[in-house]
Length: 117
Image (cartoon, rainbow, N blue to C red; front, side):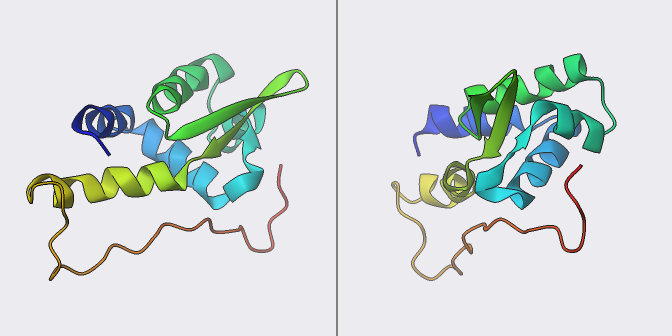
C-alpha cells in the first residue's frame, strides 16, 4: 500500500464511531449490511451514519453497492490488512521485518445465534 493510501485509510477510521461501524461490517463479511440496518444496530440516525460511511468508503475500506432502494456496505478486509501492515513495511524500504511476527489476516466473524435485524 502506498503512503497516501495508508494515510487516507488511517484518517478514515480516526473518529470514534467509524471503527465500530467497520467492526460491525467486518463481522458480516461478504454479505455486508444495508445502511438502514447499520444505523439501527448502532442506534444512529441515517443521515449521521452516511457521514461516517463516506470517509471509509472513499479510502476503500468499505465497498458500497446499490441494492434496490438502499446501499449495501461491505468491509474490504484486504484493504484493512494493507493499512495495518503499512507501518511495518514503511520503515524498512517497503519490506516488513522478516523477524517480526506476522499479522494474521483479518477474517469475518459471523454473529452466533443472533438474527440479522
